Image (cartoon, rainbow, N blue to C red):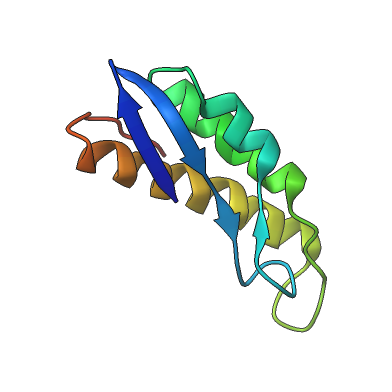
Length: 94
């Protein structure tokens, strides 16, 4: 995850998922949602949901595709909140 803040809004965003899909992927829908916005809980949770939609996880013995999609949503939002904290913004997500 990568955030670059410019005047209290997100200037640039990069997001990727690994472990859920067979290979690392970018989450362009989530990235576009973040650019130009000030990070808050609702935005980061929505970006997580969008990252999950971009992911194409597989089902195997370790977990179903639906379970992995849920993980992508939750863990993406948490990682983005961590990035926001590094920029001095206090954002918490579930």
